[in-house]
Length: 466
Image (cartoon, rainbow, N blue to C red; front, side):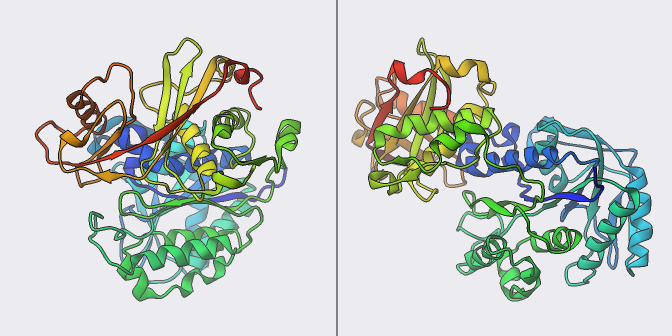
């Protein structure tokens, strides 16, 4: 087995992307969470001996790159309210020692970080990697100060170390894009900030990674990004090769841009089995077909197959709608429910695909769906109409309208119409507030929506993948 860099990926690092921190809010970033799991699974499928992660939030010293050298790489998200979400990985000390020497040969200075807990820039991607099964030797790097250069040289030092040690190495760049996309964004609002995200994602999609350094520095400053430098190190380590590259998702639900991408995957596997080939390019055109799309999305993930719809959307499925996917057992017990109140995907078919995966695997109230359960589960897809602001609770009707409550700081609770046991407006609002962690006395804005639901017939639930 050839020893070299076998995988490179980009993952964001906002703590809210970890279920224990994000809770109910994570459904607003379900495409990101799904894509991060995909990157982790592909990284491990490349069978690395070592994982190297570049974090923009590790401690910094002027004129030097940081090199974590604690006996083990440990940390938790306790300061974000979830101490049980933690990482404890072995340090690949041989790699660290050799990398320090290789960096010196490339004219760089390194400094050892010998105490403290890992920062969230490292913890969040490593959370997803460990959840996918990673427990091997790990290296975490910090950056120098912005504008000091040396990023390409550090990447080449990583590549040289990989070759010298004969390691199969996966490298992960940790970074968030613009922090100023909305008026509630953590770093304030800049109406031009979105242009950075568009430029950055565009370069990744076009495999033009050599041009990352050509993004306007003033635009980078406006965006308050922390993704370019870590990504520049990763793409230099792979010598700017882009085999198997793919942008898996981009969204900014909390005012910060989250991009997830495979930067390099030379050993990427082909289509997953005959079942995948059988539906490749199948045309779907009616809303009533969405439950079948939802089922296929979950089955594909369980079997390690397609990560995007193999279908071709036509007709009303090319429209953009918010959706919720509800998963129930064949005796009616809730098994998972996730969705969005404003559309983020390119069409309602894609929206259903993402929400189905989120409902089956990222509803923190339930364990992830297992393959053996699938024949006994039934999928319902609820397609939402336009949100209509309401002036008072008197405009609501839990039998005919769903409701969305928004606290203005990103906490949003939604409840579909005609929910069994919800018989009054007061109950509907109370449940929606509770789902978002919004207290009864907090001020909220309220919106209502109409919805149409489509449920599998019993005969449709047999056979798993279509």
